[in-house]
Image 1 (tube, helix red, strand yellow):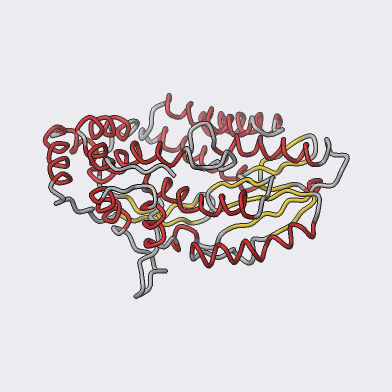
Image 2: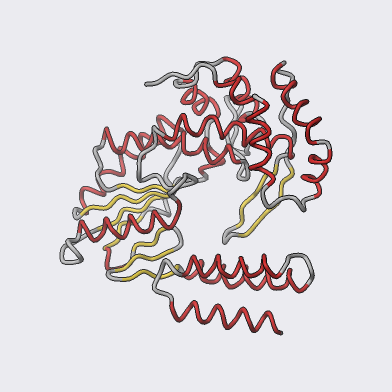
Length: 349
């Protein structure tokens, strides 16, 4: 295992902080808090650098709100100063840990994502089933309250195996410890805020332990994961059932996580494999009904924002093309036409 010792200086360097600001501010210039930070940009960045260097830095409080996408999620938004630092941490830590991740982990990684995950799932089903002539079963699981139950101590211990830099670990403890979910106990803090860029990286680092267990201890060949959703494919139903006990034990004993008891299923491929907003079937794939409804609802909301003068026509057009892009990864020609027609009805109404 490669060890990294000079991480802190790389994170807090002025070059990294200014570069992180540039990445952070993209598409946010109209936000009031971003404009206020930029008004005294150099002063704010230099002060952040000094506070970090002298270890005076304290992570600020979060602003919380709910979104429905499609289920209700509790989002916690950090201050601009903290979010710039999150980008700086991500820029240095992500390359360190990226090389340790398995290829079939698709969440929040360059050249991965939902569409890549669906393509690999489709390809793997075809391979196992010999182009749909042989059996193929999919074990699909979900981790219960994943972000809420990530254990801070376990996460820091995992990171600390590779990062041997006391100052860097102090900073990571400050960022990770800035949030505590209702799942925390007197014996330790738990939870990562949905909304932090660092939370996406920390989640992948945390579940990489599970990925390695699946691939190297259980020697599972056909495994795909996106955040806390994962699928294992096989021709053998008994084999898939027998994996549940060691999987559950590892998650509980090593990561303090539990499988969601109501989200474990084994399905034949011709029944449709539901993953990442799509349903993969022999020879074609469909959009999940919830994904379709969400796309229509969100686009209608964007049209209302345009008509209220909140967003530009260019932004509205980009939203339409984005949803059409989602549809293009399934067999949805009629649905695409329906979305376009509905869009122009809203737009001209």
